[in-house]
Length: 222
Image (tube, rainbow, N blue to C red; front, side, top):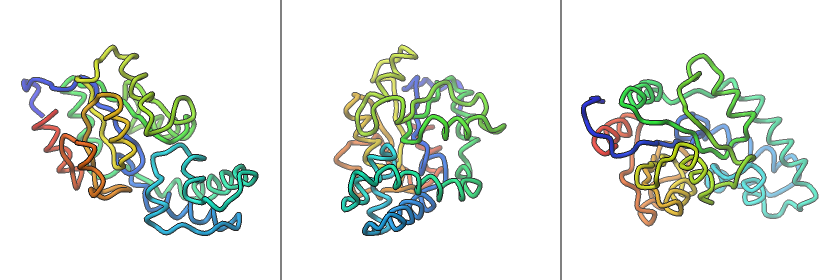
């Protein structure tokens, strides 16, 4: 990305799972296995994928409406059990690291706004390939979960960047609704949890069907 091109956005916030990290299929399976373990009606792939991006217990409760609240702790524990078994199978989408490097070289502040918890995100961010790449982050266990706009509002306050200079990138309608509620522009990606069907009403700047398309779109619009 040419450094000489003026920036439209100073702060670019990324969702994590399904946007930067290739984890959607595994998260869907882990949700389904956790619900099965506690005796609930197992959600379909589409139902399980729809809740990705929410805080964990909000997502599990929505995916398994027939599981009583007194089983939520067990449900959450079973999800974590299945997820930890697969965490070494997860990786960044190809092309993500070069994209992030080019955005940093162009002077953008980079942040993560995710439904993951702080411990899980920090474990990923402390890997050699991601150390020092992001300037800030917010997780669902330390602020309001998506689609509430508080994550973005806190990041904008931290870096003193106004909404019109902030861009949110995510693979779910929860991400795009959060951006809309915060007064920020957004970009939707379709290679994660949600299809583009629900994106149009949330007025994304553009929709990318691959990391390559995201790269090219940010070159043009970012």
